[in-house]
Image (cartoon, rainbow, N blue to C red; front, side, top):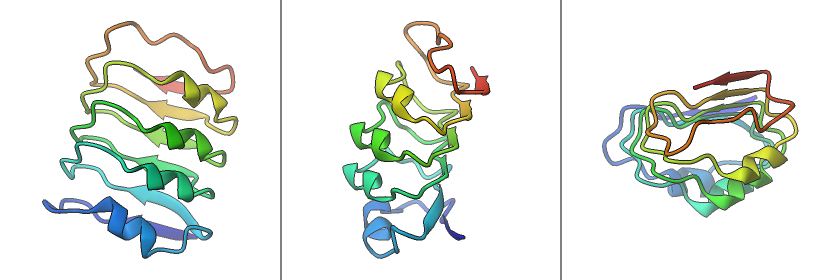
Length: 121
């Protein structure tokens, strides 16, 4: 299982790590507390990713290529600046745990994913 833990770095460049890491073996990406303003579209290249933790950053949106992560089981976006959950997350059939607490959502989060077992809001 290949994992990337690169927490607490002020000048973290996620794009550099994605291109220099084997996307076929990558199963977890944890970039919590990195003051990230956005996630690159290249995140969609990590097709075998099962866990994505981008909690406690400065994200206001999630990229569309996130829907390409069909193996994703756990998604942690808590403590960001998200105002909505993209409907494309409903395409993630293996997603069973979704933590979106601590975001200023403009509308309540509905149970829009029948397969998600744990939605933390």
